[in-house]
Every structure is written in structure tokens, then in C-alpha cells.
Image 1 (tube, chains in turn orange, blue):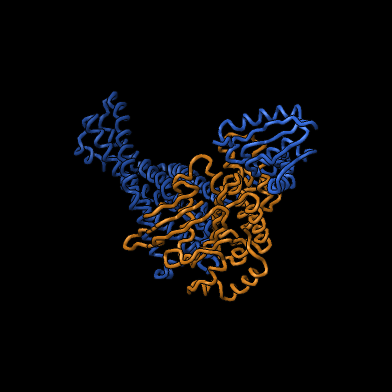
Image 2 (image 1 turned 45 degrees about the vertical axis):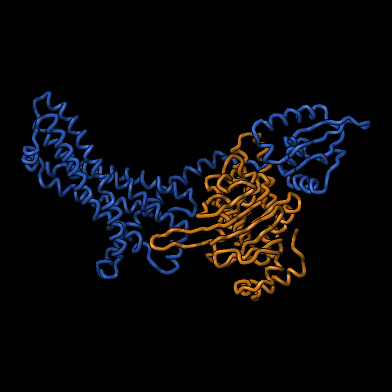
Length: 258
Length: 374
């Protein structure tokens, strides 16, 4: 689904070049739920942006669904890749329903009532009531913005879903509901998911694969169990700290999806 | 190659007709050009003569949009006989569970419309109140600055002076010069008919120095810097920077409004002089070409045609315009609500209001000082 090979990302700033990725390789197979973890500034979000073709690689290639990532943004792109941005990125001039329906409506091939039904369905799938449909994004709470953004990403049921901090800013209950939704979509539609997350509960509950970013490349990529067993200072701090222990207990209770 | 197009074939079985949807019933396929038209036509046929049973097992893929199409076709209920796979059932069940009548958009009743009108009037009054408060706060902040000049936001002031003043020089010079040329050409046509060629110095001198110079500069700066001020402060609202300042106990009047108002009060008269000089240069050039009024004569006659009081008036006017533009910019910036739409509206309102106010105040000046300098 996603094939990142030999990726270099260098951001040029006057007087100083910041190397974000150094010869990074990563493969995501169909049906994987991959979590990208890593400390602040290790280029997790930048890697997602590469997969969306929003940032061009300095060197190397990023192939998504068998095509270079830069070519994603053509007609019907919403049916190939869905993206949930960290802060939702809802169009503030549109109502909730128009936000969700936007990608379908712009294709101008389907009748309006079918599009409305499809958008309402997605709105309720993410756990929001239909009465929110005509609200404007400014009237929504942070968690609701996130859910509308997810509904918008799912409108055309894309095979690949990219999520940037999907559960950050959600209350535990909504986060659980979110995990449940993603898990069933993964099961029924064979969704492939790449997500950046710091939330260990979500990570262990959903991930079939984990990739750890540190020192400008992927340190280790494998099942959650394999990653935890890997010896690296970041992994030690991240997973085996107090928070990590709690989430690990969860992992042993409940095997991950997949 | 396999045919992926969503379509329906029908099989006649002893117990009745069985509909066999085939292809990929997915958003990607259904939204391809022409696909929907074909499918809708065949669905219409089967609505007239509904098949007895449905068998979805031949479907290559079914996603929520495809399921919605089927569900709507079935009249939002399960068909009597249906064969399908477990994942298809899960998707269809989700569609069935959530299929609701769309909520109606609220229509405004007459009393609500009247209320809205009243709210509009109150909002205008609120603008007036806020602006007055801003002026009062500016006066208090000025007092504070005079008492303790070393605490003033001088770095901000110099930054704003550069961005509002120095960076605006090329555009104001160009516009001023061209307006001068146009004005001189137009008047020269008329003056030549009366043989009153030399009066062009009076017309250009008085018109540009007293009225057009300050007004042109103010309109340009309102469009250029008034909008920038609103956008800057508005973005600070959107990104919660204003709230952060408030929490830290930093007075925004002193830190945000005062430096901008001061910078514009200083920069505006200077830009006015610059614009007027550029306009006079343009006028002088055009007068030379069109009427043969030489620049030597022009410069010689100018001091006699335009009294010194006009210059003072123009500079005083510009300083007032500057403060006005800054205050209106800040006012609308501080009123921005934390969303991008409000930011756009605020910026537009700021520019429109400041240009209107500049022209209104200019008219006021013209009335009050009608006996000065003419």
C-alpha cells in the first residue's frame, strides 16, 4: 500500500539545514494498522505528509497504492486516501454536512439526496447525532471537530486512512468509540491505517504493526510485541515507563485487531 | 480485464426473479463519470417490477455508499429474501441503523427577523462603545507612556514604523505620481480653453497638498496596513495568543494598540508628504508637456498659490487619519472570533470602515477649516 524507500527530508533554513529523515525505509502492507511513534520532532507528521504528497522528498521515493505520492491529489483522491489532520482542518465556511459531503459533491456525478444520505451516515458512524448536521465548525467542541474530520476522511471509504493524533483531545469514552469504529472498518472493509499517536491505549488496542522513529530513521518496525522487546533507549522510556506498563497490561488482556 | 462497473443482472429462478448485483459497489466506482446514470436507469426498471430475491454474494466489493444505494432502492427496509456475506451484512446493518430522515434547516420566522434587525442595530451601537473604549484606553496608555517612557514598547514601535511606513513608500509614490499626471492632464484641457494656463499651479497645489495627498495616502495605508493590523491581531485571537497575553497579565492596549496607533500617527504625515511630493512631480511633468508650464515657473509660483496653513492642516489631518486607521484595525482585530471565517469578515469590515471613516473625517475637516488657508 505504502512503500517509502531511501527517503531523505532536509528542511533548509538560512544558515542551518535540518535533516528530518536520513535514508528512511518503511513498507505498509494491505490490511496493516501501523502506528508511527517517536519523540517530538522525529518527523512523524512529516512522514504522513510525504505519504499524502504534501511534502516532496529531498531524495528517495514515496509510493502510495502503487503510484508516486505526488500524483495522489487528482480527481477522486478522496476514494484512495483519507486523512485526519491533527486539528481537523474543517472548512470553516461550510456546515458540518457540507464538510463531509464536499469530496462527493465536487465530483458532480451522484444525485444530491444520495450524497446527503451518505454524509449523514458517516456523521452518525463517528458517533455524532444528525441534529449537528447544519452546525458550523466554529460551534463544535474540539472532540466533535475531530469526529467530523474523521467522517469527512471516510466519506468515500478509502482503502488507506492516515491519522495524525486521532485520539488526542478526545475524552476516554470517545477514544474507545473511535477505536471500536476503526476496528470494525478494518475488519469489514479491509482498511489499511497509518497513524501517528502518543496514546498507548489506542496504539496497543488497534495496531498490528508499530514503527519507531528515532535518529532520523525507522529504528524498528514490527508487531507491538517485537517492538517492545527491541533494545533502544527511546523504546525503553516510551513503553516501559509507568504509562507504558499500564497499557501493556491491557495488551495482555486483549490481543490487538487483525 | 474484469468488469468493475457496478451493475445488476437478473436471474429467473423457479421461485421468482433474483437480482444479482455485480461489480464493485464502491464510492470510487459509483462516482466515475457516467456510471451512476447507467445504474440509476437499471434500478428504475427494477423498481417497477421488483425482483423477489436479492443475492449479493456475487458482489466484488460493497462499501457504505454502495450499501446506501441498495438501502434507498429497497425503500429503506430489508427485502424479503436476501443472500449475503457477513461483511456485507455488517455494512448494510450499519446503513440501516443510521438511516434517518435528514434534519430540516431552520427557517426564520417573522418575529425572529425583527429580532435580527434589532440585534444588528445593537451591534452597531456596540461597535461605537468598543471604539470609544479603545480611544479612552489609548489616552490612558499614552499617559502611562509619558510617565514612564523607558517602559514603552519601543521595539514594537520601530518594527511597525518600518512595516507601515518605509515599506509603503514605493506604492504610495507610484499611485501619487500617476494621480498627479492624470489630474494635470484633465485640468489642462479645460484651462487651455480659457487661456488660464498658469492657474494649473493653484489647482494642483491646493488640490494635492490640502486634499488629495492626505486622502490618497490614508486610503492606501488603510487598505495596506489597516487590513494587516486586523489580520495580525485576529490571527492572535484564532491561535489563542490574545488569551495567553491576558492570562499573563500583559495589557493588550499598551502592547498591541498603542505601538500601532503611535506608529501610524508618526508614519502617516510622513507618507502624506511623500505622496504629495510624488503627485506634484507628476503634475509638474504633465503641466510641462501639456501646457508648457515649466518646472521652474511651477516651483516659483507654488508658494504663492498655496499658503503655509494648508501644509499644517494636511499634516494634522494625516496624523488623525493614521490614529483612526490603527484604532479601527485594532478594534476589528480584537473582535475576531476564533475561526477563520470571522477573520476574513473582520479584515474586510476593517478596511471598508477605515476608508469610509477617513473620507467622513476628511469632509468634517473640510467643513471646520473652510476659512483656513484659502
